[in-house]
Image (spheres, helix red, strand yellow):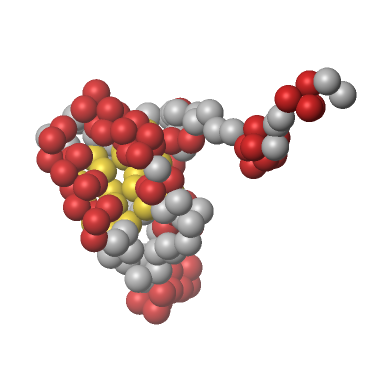
Length: 151
């Protein structure tokens, strides 16, 4: 063995086999970004419109695979598994302890197992924008009176 081969062999023994894009794979629950079709964060998981979009996506493309973050709590987890079973889509729960579970971290990733899809907008909020009134709109509607018309 030459010096470089010996050093590579020692590095693999000490640090393990080098991985391709480990941060990207950690963010997308174990898959590469180019394979992803749809994502939901923990905050979006509580919105019924986003869940309906997820169910629609799964039914339209049953060849896809759903990866669920292992930190998803039971009521939502049961609902996600039911969506996958109804659409006949395979799914896995990634229970890696290094996965994050804040409101903006990914809870669900719908992806292809081995094919690059190259979809630009994968966030469910971009695919299914919600029309919401802001707090200031609600306040103006609350305090509206006939006197305001005649000022």
